[in-house]
Image (cartoon, rainbow, N blue to C red; front, side, top):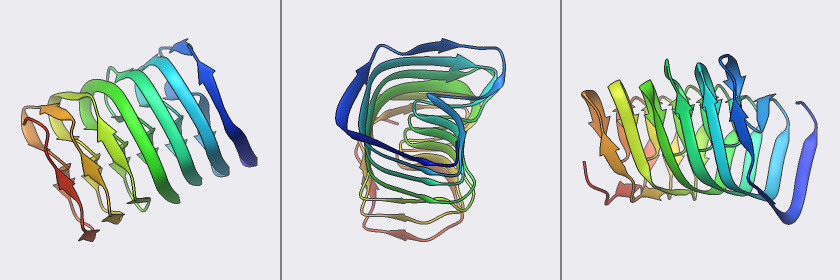
Length: 178
């Protein structure tokens, strides 16, 4: 998807996606803009690179709410995006139970150059192996003015906000159980 999707503050409910493949979400891949929409009670299950909104993003996601569950059996799962290669995730709320092998986050599983600002996550984050965080499983992008109250479970490199962090952080915190 490389266009502009403006949900005009509508709610889309009950989306179920169960695919044994990669790049799975309401949008598989996006380099466009997704904004002003609520995805309620999503159930996304895939092999890897799965998110409640998009599997892999290089675009912007703004003013989006997502609730439900996301599972990537072999990793890279996020309440919003499995992988954020680029772009900005701004004013996003995710109440998603997110699970998989590794790189599991309440907002993004792996944030390469994607930034997260003014966003919030809750739910349960479960990494069977490594890299679990309430906001981002592994982040080299910036995170600002965001917080998580998600409960985190992992084996290696897991934390309330990040599993691994190699990027700038400003006024960000976590209060969930680790």
